[in-house]
Image 1 (cartoon, rainbow, N blue to C red):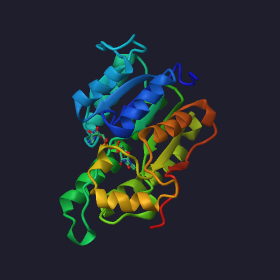
Image 2 (image 1 turned 45 degrees about the horizontal axis):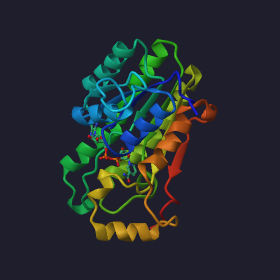
Image 3 (image 1 turned 180 degrees about the horizontal axis):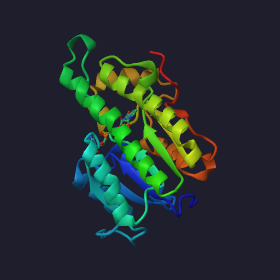
Image 4 (image 1 turned 180 degrees about the vertical axis):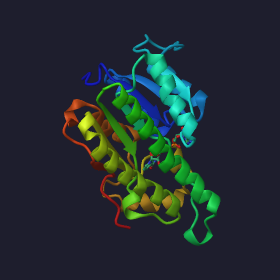
Length: 257
Ligand code: NAD
């Protein structure tokens, strides 16, 4: 039950959707959670849900803490890892990059700014956090598990998401390469490819489109953030001790469009 009792888990994008569910799940497995989000108040709300410091609800179950950072900025990502290390006197042994955005537009109309912004947060942000976490773990001689949230869209594409699909395909390649480079340091790196999950991100999609998508999912319904969190918890734990460089689909079956 408490597979992550001694783990310190850094979760980015922890203020909403999948990142919040991952934070709750990892804390439930015994991990101490460093919850980071661009929206600092949302990260604090996640920590409150975990029963961390400042929580008035229920007994404190861990020494969780919230951090505000924009992962797409190199200096901010590096500072985040420094702050987490300073706060807990050790680097995070589990790092989950959930921070992500969409800016949908058909290829023929997509602005350069929409392309750049999505690549900056989803791909460069994941690179910066993976790099900073890898540096912190290697320099302190610690092993760890890095889990990057990609998307099935990175494999099969999706109308209106050239920027998003490219960023998520990039996350798979970056994670596989990090796994090759960091394996000898005892650091595993895996990506998780959710399908369509009910979160604020998919709530933005028009209902008509979502109905069509739901009709194409063999399981017949969207996934819950907890479905993704379950797989992240497995990859964070020693139950997956010989799994690295993998990209795990959590889709209710991959869409073929
Ligand atoms: P969400 O919008 O609910 O949460 C994303 C969080 O990331 C927000 O709290 C946001 O503030 C934060 N964030 C955005 N930019 C940031 C930045 N620059 N620095 C730090 N934090 C930042 O979305 P979600 O559905 O929970 O998505 C989480 C991850 O899962 C994303 O990477 C997304 O691409 C991926 N994903 C989601 C789905 C889905 O169907 N919801 C499917 C596949 C993959």
